[in-house]
Image 1 (cartoon, rainbow, N blue to C red):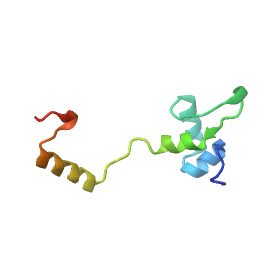
Image 2 (spheres, rainbow, N blue to C red; image 1 turned 120 degrees about the horizontal axis):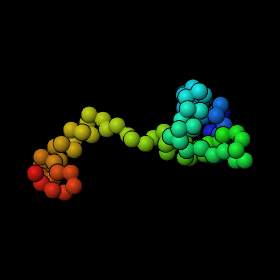
Image 3 (tube, rainbow, N blue to C red; image 1 turned 60 degrees about the vertical axis):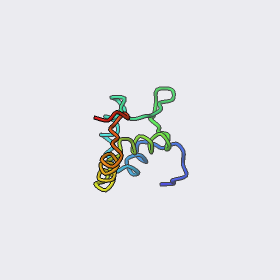
Length: 84
């Protein structure tokens, strides 16, 4: 697959993401993945939109969580800037 392509097909999204085509169709029909359907025909995906969608909801590493906890203890900061 040419990673310089800006517009991808379902087959290319499947190869790129490792998701099965049937699951991609399920995501499109439920409106859970950004896609485009010009003239109501084939489904296309913007590579940039797909990458942003794939990278949403990052999971913090244990080290990141420990650093945040240490900073909160050291500086007395709670979420939202209010000290408990």
